[in-house]
Structure formats: structure tokens, C-alpha cells
Amino acid sequence: MEEGALEPRLSSLTANCKRGSNQSAQRQLRQQKLSVFRKCCYAIGGAPNQVAGSASAFFLQIYLLDVAQITPFEASLVLCIGKTWGGITDPIVGYFINKSRWTRIGRLMPWMLGSMPFLVVSYFFLWFVPSFVTGRVLWYLILFCSFQALSTIYHVPYTTLTMFLSAKQSERDSATAYRMTMEVLGTLIGAALQGQIIASAHTAHHCHVTNGTMNFTVNDTDAMENITFFIPGTPDYQLHARNVYMIAAGVIGCIYLFCTVVLFLGVKEKHDPYAFQPGMIMPFCSGFRQSMQHGPYLFLTFSFLLISAAVQLQQSNFVLFCTHAADNLRKHFQNLVLTILISAVVSIPFWQWFLQRFGKKMAAFGISWMIPFAIMLVTIPNIVVAYLVAVSSGVSIAASLLLPWSMLPDVVDNFRLMNPQAKGLEAIFYSSFVFFTKLSAGIALGISTLSLQFAGYSSAACKQPYLVVLTLQLLISAVPAVLIVLGLFILIFYPITEDARKETELALDVMRLRTRRSTLIVI
Image 1 (cartoon, rainbow, N blue to C red):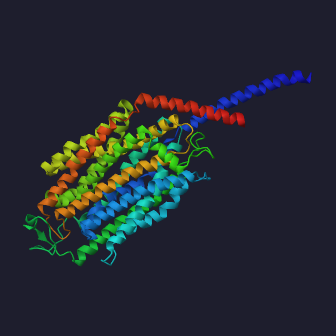
Image 2 (tube, rainbow, N blue to C red):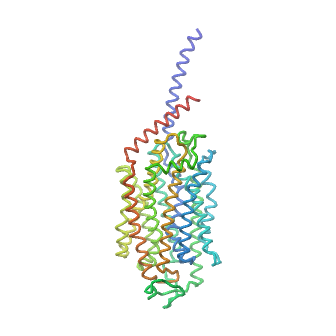
Image 3 (cartoon, helix red, strand yellow):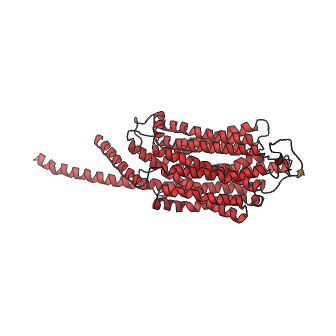
């Protein structure tokens, strides 16, 4: 009698368990969908690095040459070694993140919170001119290397966080679009703040003009003809230039603090049972070796290695070009920079629609849009053409910023599918990618600044020699064009198509479902 009474009760419990498991599955699907609020908070977290990066990309080179007044050779050492060191720290940070344990606030969040105060301090003093002259280059080298390293400690876990926002690929793509929109907006804010605050240090000729020669030599005898110089020791101008750069650095430091707090309060790092299982994390060296043997990753990395170097060259030399190679653009450089970045912000939604409609690989070829306009600026350096070039460059820069970070999660997912036994390699993929792009940018910046030294650049010159003008023209047109064409040629062989990406997403969903079921059975 009792056994008969238990049977319907057991069947009822079984039905309730099935209903509970279905409801649990539905809850998991709902949890994979990110709210607009969380996407915005995640996007805001990426803004400060772009604000600081934009300010340094556009203005650090001219600051070192004209305000700090170190030689082009010394500036090339600071830029090249600093960028290269920032790249070297990427895999190191990836290694330690790979070894870190899960905490109450996640596995990645502690790295961002811990690095932020030191990052702000190093950035502020990067724009401070010390009283000593001898050894000044070491001051900037140490601080730029520190800033690059600390920026990496913040950026690598932040970009890796994309993989732990949601297991759903479309949600990650959407979060990436939010992030890139905010990062381009951060780039705009950085360039706008820096440009408007420090504009008075460069738009006017603060120089006492004398015809003659200075105590330095150049190889080309023609380079010394018709050069005018100013005495750089005018105290009022030097003090004003130093002060406005420090004010800009302080404002950007406050942006770092605000955005990091928003990221911490608004984003929850999700534990992916498939991506991270304790005791199953592959050693860093083995993971790095496997990632470098993955074909799609190599094609993507080396393609954007060249493209990012091209964009960096244009950004770093654009203000120098406007100041020293196109006199009619001298008073417009901060507005041109602003136009470039406004164009980039506005075009991000267009590129997000385009890559969803026509595919990411097809969208990448939109980066080449900047090539003919850059060449046009060099050949016809007037104000109307300059603003047309600024708009077109912004459209291309938006594509170059959005696409690698939208394509990299696809590469990681493809690797997961091909190597299901490899766990926890997300940080290795992201840190290695940033390493190679920073390395290429550092080498490109070092060579470009060094070329100005050979051309005869002098911070004491009101008008630079013809060789310097020609070098700047090449650095913002022909050289970036060649790098972009080579990068897009490599990208032709990138094997992950839209169909392959969708198949990978479906296969990984099945694998995650199996992992959850096996976990429930064990429980």
C-alpha cells in the first residue's frame, strides 16, 4: 500500500525535476543576454586607456621634441623602447592572469583595479618636464615604459573579459561594438582635451627669428639654406607649454579613476564552465606554442600588425606634419584631429552593420579607404582637402579599431573547437595579439622619429629643412599605404568565413550543453 502511494509521488518529483531543469536552461539562456546597462558599463571601462593612448599617440612625439626638447634620436629611443616594452609585458601579464585564481570579484577584475592608481601616477609624470637636462631622456624612458607596462596590466584582462561576459557569440559581438564605440569616443575625448588644452603651445610661432646657423650639422649642405631659428630659452613660453601639458594630464588621470569605478560596479565577470575548469589550465608556454601554431590566429595577427603600425604612423606624425610641413594647417591641427575622431565615432555603427551584413573579412577592406585621401593631402595641402582627409581617415580608423577585436573572439572559439582539451588560453591569445601589434607600432615609431633625425629636424627651427618636410609627407602617406596594402593582402588568406563562424558557435553550444549535463549528473 505504501509502495503504491510512493509511485505517483516519485513520478511527480521526476516531472518537477524535468520542469526545473527546463526552467534552469531557460534561465541560463536569459543570463547569456547582456543588458544595455552592462554593455555600457563594460564599454566605459575601456575608454580611459584610449583617452590616454590617443593623447600620447597624437602629441607625445611633438611634446618630446618641442617642449621637453630632447633630440629626435632620444625621442625615437623613448618611443621605440617604451612601445616594445609594453608589448613584451603583454605575454608576461597573460602568463600571470593564466595562473591567477578565481576571487569573489572574478579572475580578471583584481588586475584592473590594482593597476589603476599606479597607472594614473605614471601617466601624469610622463608629461612633467624635470628641472635637470642631463639624463632627461632616462626620465621619459622610465616613465613611458612604466606607463606602457601598467597600461598592459589594465588592458589585457579588460579585453579578455569579453570572453566572460556571455557564452553567446552575438552578445559578445554586440558588447564589442559598444566597447569600440566608447573607445573611439574615448580617443576623441583624449585628442579633443589634449588638443584644445595644449593648442596655444603650438599654434603660434613663439620664436625670436634670426637668420643664421646653429651649432649642429647635417649631411645635406642644402638643408641649411634659408632656415630660421628661435632661441628656445624664452621662459614664459616654456613655462606655459609645460603647464598646459600637465593640466591635460591631470584631467585624463581623473577620467581613469571614474571609468574604472563604473566598470567595477556595473560589470559582473561570468564563470564559463567550459572555458575555465580548475586543474585543467594548460601551462603558459605550451599554450603560447599552440596559439602560434593556429593558422587563423597567425593570419589575423600579422595582418593587423601591419595595419596598426600604419595607423600609428599617421597618428604620431599628423600633428608634426600640420605644424612643420604645411604652414596653412598649423592653426587647424587640433580641429583636424577632432574631425578624424568624430568621423571614427560616427562610423562605428556603420561598420557594425556592415560586418553583420557582409561579413567581417569583407569589412576589413574598408581600411584601405584612407590611402587615396592621405596621398591627396600631401599633394594638395589645403584646408578643404585636409578636412576631407580627416573624415575619410576617421572612417578607416574606426574599421581598424573595431574589426580585430571583433574577429579575435572568433579565432579563440575556433581554437576551442579544434583543441577541446586546451582550457583557459583566452588571456594568452589576447596578450600575444597586443604584444605583436605594440611591437610593430614601437618599431615603426622608432624608425619614423629616427628618420627625422637623419633628415635634420631641430626643435629650435621655426621652419624645418626640405628633407624634414619630405620625410613627414612620406610618413603620413606612402609608408602607411604600403603597410595597409600588405596587411590586407595577408588577410585574404584568413580562413574563418561567416558560415564557418556560425558552425563553430553551434558546435561550442553543444559542447557547453554536454559539460553542464555532466556536471549535473555528478551533482
